[in-house]
Length: 539
Image 1 (tube, rainbow, N blue to C red):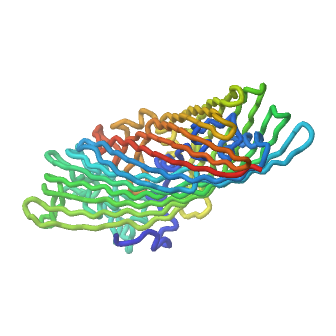
Image 2 (spheres, rainbow, N blue to C red):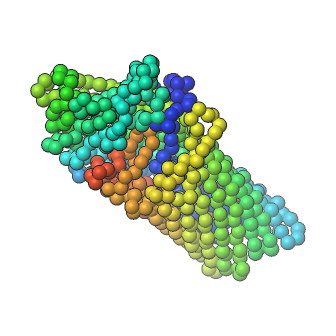
Image 3 (cartoon, one colour):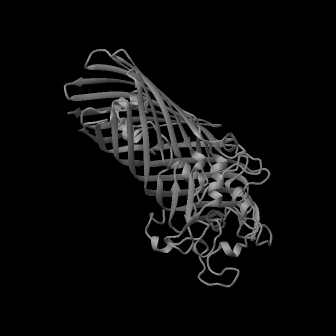
């Protein structure tokens, strides 16, 4: 690469609208809901809305701290073995990845009281609530169109002088189209790398590389990494062992990194011929490379209740406000291309890259609503059932106003896209625990999450808009977790072990379908096998 990321951020502190925008897809990428927590929590499918009594209660229902009778300190480790499979029209491609993660550490303190409130509990914890690690690649043969044709379709009407460096249509010198205009950055990058060209003498019409008779294929590679960490401070109370209340504040720190390569190779393409200054048939190939990094901090509030009307039954509810995130975005795009007209056989090689961008935005993540019920059978068995609704259409975005560091205005188009693309996700959690002896327990759980993507957005012909110069996106389908676990208690010490199998199916698009044509895509299946170990002391 000609530049490393963030070497000249001073050039792009205040970007034009062509780059400084967060899309609905960006918001989607950084707000997944994952089953994470202590080994006991995971092994029971996370069905703890009405159970409580676990450090992970601080990330789910803070009223669960009111169940505690003793103080607790514990920590959790996780080893994740990940298998990624990409199914394309060329065949299946598999990749593997193993990650070791420190998931959480927490402390719960219990203060005995007299009167109706028998005790007051408080807790602090660190939790990794999301991991963005994912990688895959694929290959599509006999493509129907080209990314260049899509870019050409929405660049129509823009004067080509506004896409070139130097003089613009108004005669300005030292003109930088990335910083001095509000034109789309992918249009600028594509025009300067000859992915799109002006036919004949027109300055406002554009042609892509794909034409009648073109034969082409496409390759793609995606690398994602990052995390969302939450630091919780919770307080809970207990009224006569019947009503338990809890209030918590979550401080969030997140980082999301994405690197993508997208390549096309074509014969019979419509390319620029330097010798004749005309467009002609020939061979074409290009690689679009993108790197982006999003970091952010924010806060949320959680409130919950657990009611125990009879000894054997608990009912719990919890509400999470959105996390109010302040985000920073950095990145750039690059194209390496070559074109060979059939008649001249002279190859033109081009390498172009964008300016580096650095801008801020605001995002309100979804509201979350939970309800659960659990029962104790005898003194040995526990059964628990939860339902959660995650209101993805209610996400809200703001963008940094051009020329201002502190003024953020509503992203009306982005928020409209959120409502158009996404729907609420529904999560069902089921958990069971059986105490074989006073010290030894076995557990099982199941967790199922419906897709939060509307059918109208997930198909092969839906137009989906992204920001910047990375046009690719992946939309998840249903997600399921199958969990097993064991636990051992010896006096004040405990140790829990869980196995978690996660299956996530998704569809990848290299760029949006347009004009009724399918674009390179793949059906994907991610399988995670996690071994989670928690240990701690109650005293």
